[in-house]
Length: 90
Image (tube, rainbow, N blue to C red; front, top):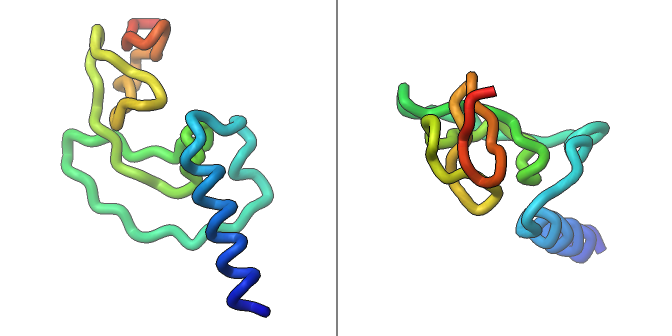
């Protein structure tokens, strides 16, 4: 029975995490066992619930003018925001 429950929860997590976006409160009230993350000095380390990611993760640092969005494996640098799929100064 436990195995069946574990498989069901795992399948649910995969379905939720493969959708394009999650609500910003996706990680609230949940407990996650996250691995230690070692990133290169050029990466940004963030928790991004909107990408269904509730653990710290390494993302490529995107500069101004770079393409951004849910299907890109990077995040706009600290002083930039993803607007209309382009990293722009705020």
